[in-house]
Length: 150
Image 1 (cartoon, one colour):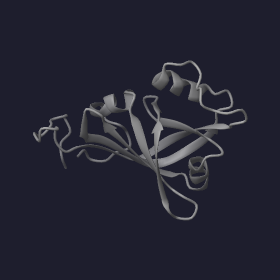
Image 2 (tube, one colour):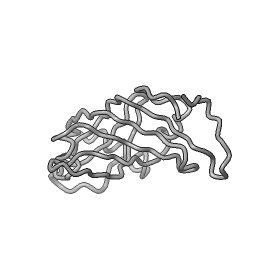
Image 3 (tube, one colour):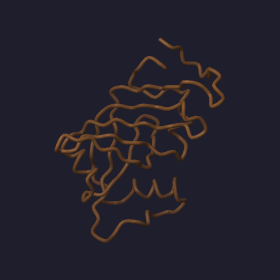
Image 4 (cartoon, helix red, strand yellow):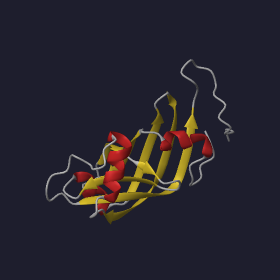
């Protein structure tokens, strides 16, 4: 495990640059935890994802901006990123961000699943702690990814 910082190390760029999905954990207004799978984009500094305002995910994060993400390497589930932080929320009225997600994940220019009247928002994760983790390769051998265990 790497020493925690607040940036994604180069050893794990492939995980955030690929068409992987993130597990997003958040607090519900009643104090229970929620966890959702999201498509995301990494801009070289921040992980960003989207939802519509009528969804519980929006209500949760509008009420409490704390978030934790886990993004797993699909080729080796023992290698993953954990990102803890808070989210900034902004309207995506021009649908620029969600359309970039459609291009990345669906190879379509426009996101096809929203209904008329849906109000889109984008969450930008401001990391407080990033952990680049690996345990071992699928065959049980240690993996050297250039991160020294502390």
